Image (tube, rainbow, N blue to C red; front, top):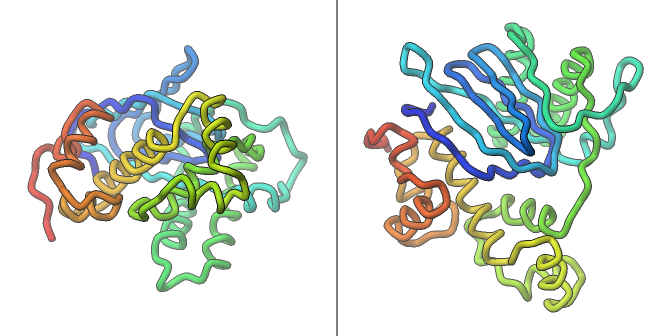
Length: 252
């Protein structure tokens, strides 16, 4: 739960995602468009986009949201219960989604996060059930276009603390280092920049969704030094990691 009003620049959403806002106000901006949510609203986001995101506290001083991101295989294997409409482009706000929808989101979040209690098959079923809810609301996700950068982002996000190197990643993608470097250059990015950005995005998620100490989160995203992590985080987002929690001290 966030404890202060914050703005995040260039938040990359590679895969189709859903955000349910429980408290506060959230705004997303991309390519001259703006979407605003209030407590009780949700937003479906097509993959392959970058947003500037503003999170503002409610009148009671609260901000809380749920995020879910779908694996491409689940999107490809989903069959809508009714006529298939046009795939979502950009984003769409769903106003006051109701308790049943929120309960389905909570079930899906539990299936994804509590891996010791829920087999992968159950987690996938819960994510597919949520796609049915979205389909009833008129939202259908398309499989996002895969780029080399998006492949790397998914790879890094699966294990942000790993000591990723270009030779190892190039071998994993069955290409030479020169080809990997060239493809990333064409897409306007670089290996080190992508890795750092994914690590910072994962850190932001952990800061918002857990009470782990900053030093623990730094280690979880590949930084041995909490101070170096804090410097990198400030460079990326413009504020310290503690700002997300209103400068409160995290519990154990």
